[in-house]
Image 1 (cartoon, rainbow, N blue to C red):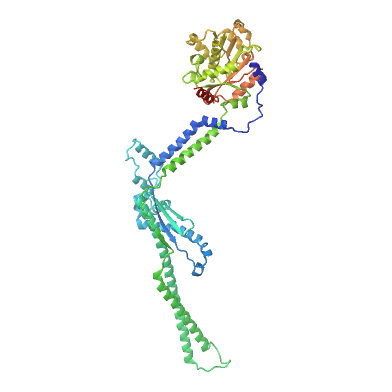
Image 2 (cartoon, helix red, strand yellow):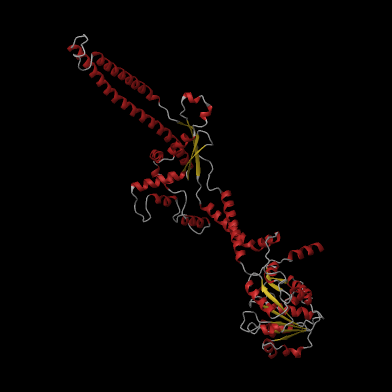
Length: 587
């Protein structure tokens, strides 16, 4: 089997060329990604739901009242008969009325009419500050009393006092009340009709209805006042013009009468003629008289029509007290914040995945290292920091950990008489990968299979195997398993590149050496070069792939055959689901 692995790998040559990149993402990759990051994504979704729930629980119920007015289009009678023109005359007029409804003039009229400046339900802002929300949540949880400054009176103080607690000027207070009014008011056009919806939001449902109705009434009143003021201004202009024309008419008539008193009615010759004639004076007087009569008629008509002035708008639906709150929208808010948290978690998971340079999958090992994953060992709870006990295969022979390692030893690491595989090294890039546990369990499997096995602890900086077999582990090891501690003299010679130091153990069928890791001060290259094969151990999700690449490159440079990689503490087993299905089918 080792010959086949060596032929396939070509003494360390990549199975898949390094310059070939996979340009597709399979469904299995997506499933693996979601499975791996599911807790992280779910945590962000839960955080979003918690924020939404916090917002719902700490927000005051807001009520919205609606009233509706209808704009009467000012279309001349001759144009009113042409339907094509009726359809195109509404946009500018309605938009103008919308601007008037949102103006400060209407707001001031409503504020003065309802005395909103002194109404605490109106002066308190709709949105509570974060500190007030936290105190409300603590009150709901029973961790604070309701009298800790979270009532509406304290919120309302923001409109009567500044940040330093000083009393605000009348102008500033008025501006803040206006801002509060504008924040609660919404004016929209109902489709493409002449109807306008006036919405107002408030904590008090009765106040919301009153303000909405008062806004509509103020708009209609403003229309009447504007028309009345325009009519009065026109009357004043007509009065002044009538007085002026009357004076001019009287003067012209007086001139005619004086001319008649001084002259006879004979027609003078051209030489005797000087100044206007009687006919010219009479025409001038008659012109002023007709102007006076026309202005007087217009004045009389305006005076008669003034009591019948009507506005361009009328109320067609008054606001009533809303029965249910319109804000916060609990279902919508919770769904939005949860979805936002889910999407944010997914985006961060993708960013983490792209930035992650640790080994996590068989495909990644093949693409990055050109090696096979010969075993995926799951996390073993409460044993050797999750890597499993050194004799885990003996203690739990049917566990997933034991079966995975046993299958790997049977398929990839079995001895071949043609190659006489005898020296097997176990190495890792970092000391926390769990290579000691892998080496100990491989030796135990070989011993239990009837092969006389020697396990050597060649890692003096991390003598986990030596400490284990020097204690209780020495009484638990299989009969065919011998152990050589890292303090033994043959081990030092082996690390120095002298494999003949093991001549005394020539009768052993298999020798497994726990080599120093790549980052250790003890050199591993000489001992690794003496091995028939070296297995690389890497911790799933923790071992940087750059270090493993460097280690594999060193082994290839030493012409050491590398059967593959053993991943420890794997949390996403590629074959686990298939084993579960197989067990289910066998039932």
